[in-house]
Every structure is written in C-alpha cells, then in structure tokens.
Image (cartoon, rainbow, N blue to C red; front, side, top):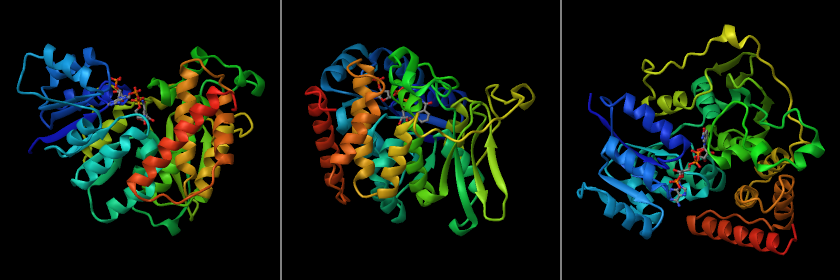
Amino acid sequence: MKKRKVSVLGSTGSIGRQTLDVLSAFKEDFEVVGLAAGSNVQLLIEQIKEHKPRFVSVKDTELAQELKSTLSDHSIEIFCNDVGLEFISSSACDIVVNGLVGSMGLKPTISALSHGKRVAFANKETLVVAGGLIKNLLKRNKGEIIPLDSEHVAIHQCISGARESEIKRIILTASGGPFRTWKEQDIQKATKEEALKHPTWVMGPKITIDSATLMNKGLEIIEAMVLFELPVGKIDVFIHPQSIVHSAVEFVDGNIIAQLGATDMRLPVQYSLFYPQRRELPFNLFCDLLSVGKLEFEAPDFNKFPCLKLAYHAAKEGKSYPIVLNAANEIAVDMFLKEEIKFGDIPKIISSTMENHKPSEPSSLDEITELDARIRREVSERAKTSKI
Ligand SMILES: NC(=O)c1ccc[n+]([C@@H]2O[C@H](COP(=O)([O-])OP(=O)(O)OC[C@H]3O[C@@H](n4cnc5c(N)ncnc54)[C@H](OP(=O)(O)O)[C@@H]3O)[C@@H](O)[C@H]2O)c1
C-alpha cells in the first residue's frame, strides 16, 4: 500500500513526541513530510535527522534562522510562525496531527480541513473556541477529523454510528487529577509542583494543570458536543481513578459500551492514524485487567472543582461563552505556571471573566480570533491590577 504522508504540529510536545514514536514504528506505512514546533530547536533537529521531513516550522524568524544555520540538509524548507503552521497543514500531506496546545491550533486546523486532509485531533481548545466553524467545514465535506484525545477515541469506538435518538448519554471518565482526595481549602493553596504531579498520565504542562482543576474534562465536554453532535444534557463526567475505562456510551436500551486500555497515548495516536484499520501493536501496551484488579467510579465534586461547573455553564449557554472560558483559562493557567497567581485563583479569574462578559455570536474566523484576543487582553490587564 502507498505510504501516507503525515505532518505533525507540535512535534516537540508530549503528543508530538508520542506520535513520532508511533510513526517510527510504522515506517512502511507512513512518511513524515512536515514538522512544526515552538522553540525547542534542539529536539526538533533530532527529529529532523530521524524523520527527514521536507518542511519544518518554528515559532519565530530568529529560531528559523538558528535552525537554518545548524541544518546541513539545505533541501529542507524552513518556515516560521502562523504562516509556517498553515503552510505545513496544507502542504503535500494526507494526515495532519494537531498536537498544538491552546487556540493557536485553530488556523492550521481550518487550513488542513480546507485542503481536504484528515486531521488526527488532540488540540481540544480549537473545538471549544470554533466548534461551529469546524462543523460547517466538515459538513461541506472538507476533510475529516479523527479524534486523538483518549476519551474521544473511546467514544468514537463505542458509539459506532448510532443515531442521537439511540444514545442516552456518553460518560466521559476523568482520573480526578492529583487533588481528588484533597480538602477544598487545601486545593486552593496547591503549589505548581503539586499540581504538575498527575497520578496516571504524563502530559504537557497546560493539560496537566487543566487536569488538576478538571477544566480538561470541561473542555472535553465541549469537544465531545462538537465531534459527536450531542447536546450537553447527554454528556456526563465520572471520576475513574484507575484511568483504564477511557469513556463509555450508554444507549437508550440500557446497554453501556465502554472502551478500556492502557494509559498510554500511543494507543489513541495509533488508532487515529490508522482508522478504520487496526494494526498489531509494536509496543507492549496491553492492559492486564487482572493486575488492575478493580475499577472505581464516583461523581465529580463541583464545589472542589469549580472549573468543571464553569465549563458546563459555558457549554449550556453556548454563543461566545466557550471562547471566553477557554481564553480566560489559557491566561490563568499560564499565570499559575509562572507562579504569578495561586491555584485557587484559576477558577476565580474564569468565573469573573464570564460574569462580566456580554454574550455575542461570533461565527467567522476573524470574529472568533478578535474576541479571543480581547478576552486575553482584558484578563491579563485585570490580573495585573489585582482585580481578579
Ligand atoms: N499530552 C497528552 O497526553 C494529551 C492527551 C490528550 C489531549 N492532549 C491535547 O493535545 C494538545 C497538546 O498537548 P501536549 O500535552 O502535547 O502539549 P505540550 O507538551 O505543551 O506541547 C505543545 C507543542 O506545541 C508547540 N508550540 C508551542 N507554541 C508554539 C508556537 N507558537 N508555534 C508552534 N508550535 C508551538 C510546542 O513546541 P516547543 O515545545 O518546541 O516550544 C510543543 O511542540 C493539547 O490541546 C492537549 O489538551 C494532550
């Protein structure tokens, strides 16, 4: 069979590195044609040596110059910033893996879909801020999205073409993060080191903090609404500390179909790249249920984790609220990672931003990016003057 050409956006990140692991194991099936990273030029150079892409992109012109002066292979075309991301997404490839973090993944997603690509999709923030826009592109038969987020890969497998009327609800599982068993007042004061200690997954810093606040699950609710065209009333969250059941679908006849597997992102990466085929695993990622022993489920505590409540609110209200939720969260998480605010300030910032927001219905890319930028500016300014 002809090799499929793949571009990886965010190749130096957690998703990107695991995607390249899978691609290295399946060199007969895939050829890497594009790599896009931010500022980790050192790792990008190693990836270029191993995968020999035709196109690479980095965050800015300075880094592009640095890369150019280091690379001996002058046939590689080097790009930077948004232009580079959009070029790599629309270049001569069949599959674009979107492992970018935050809403910066939006424009390259539009670019990839407009050029009819398969997008293997980890970058949930894009679907949160522009779900309607992306759904319209897909309805016009522009490209396809195959989920890469483990919960949505689980639902994709369980839902198996069922109509909305046949689905009672989907159950998104969450590990509960590092603070599942902590008291509410202690969570408020949690340090960066404590918040970055995820109990079951090793991921990039932003999603790790989102998992600690449960905002990650909130973003996934909106992601699931877009991907599976379901109303928010049909999406429930269960805390499942073992992270073995990756999610489930409950049907109207009482049957529940769940997907189980090891906690390793190379499983969903492989699924997303090969779908609808299944291929034998080249890694030992089989899940030994006997050694797991027990599977537990609990309801989420909305008082301890107000970010989940805020995300449900944004999902129910719709309009511009998901954009506001996401922008305020991205800024707040960034400030927490820079140790400028406390852990307990993250939901406060998001909540006050949503309360002050007058909803609108941005539908074009320009309207969405303009609102996103305005909310980011407002949140940063308010935080600087301590009006959180
Ligand atoms: N990690 C997981 O297991 C996991 C699971 C499910 C879903 N997701 C989702 O996948 C996405 C990526 O998560 P992650 O954990 O892989 O994040 P990450 O480790 O922080 O990686 C982010 C990637 O984006 C790149 N990047 C940052 N700024 C950039 C810019 N201006 N231009 C181009 N590239 C830029 C980074 O490059 P540099 O490092 O070179 O700066 C890095 O390659 C998120 O939406 C997350 O929610 C992740």
